[in-house]
Length: 277
Image 1 (tube, rainbow, N blue to C red):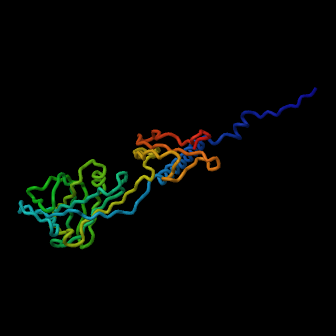
Image 2: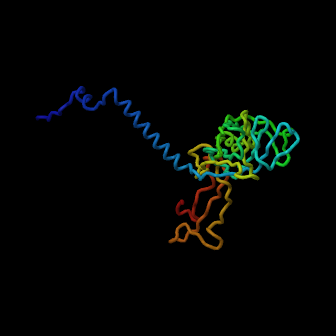
Image 3: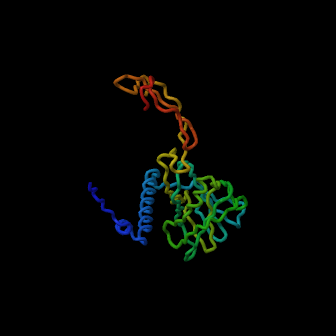
């Protein structure tokens, strides 16, 4: 009896046909993995963050302080910023959504009068205490912490300062929001106040999660307690059934204010247990 012979390939030949070049295989794999990771991250970032149009917030208080007049209040005229004078401006940002992430925040002010020929560098500090534009004086002015933000004033155009870091601190509760102080060591400039022309304003760009209870990204907030919907009803007086043909009454869960990622409420189920929704 003759048994057919099976053709056997030498291991050396198989290795030659199947192996990738040693210098290329790890690098190709690494590049492919990086491409997949970047694409996946971009997909989820786009899906769970929604940018909003920029918000313009006008000042709700501004004042001018003259060092040589320690008990005099200037709360309604142009905002002078000179070596002997400072300006205060405040903004209410409480209207921003609590879950928003500030992308940028810019302070905009317009010169009313430039002293001398300029230019003047105007610096921004974060005010450390409360003040009121109708009563604040140099003698009662709170201290201020420099932010590092500055802008050069050389013409009658909108002057812009990047105050993103400071506004983020306000919004996150890291620092209290008592407004900003403007100072300079140069000849100086008078800016328009809200009573004299174009008011100082903040231009804020932000984004917000479109699914704040999603456990995929950290820091998301859970749903509030929505209460318990009455069994077998969707609206008052309108019957609801889980299976229209069978007419089985439906039930609804209570959604609890649980920690992010924890189960919230029971599953949907029908009255007689024919199936799960």
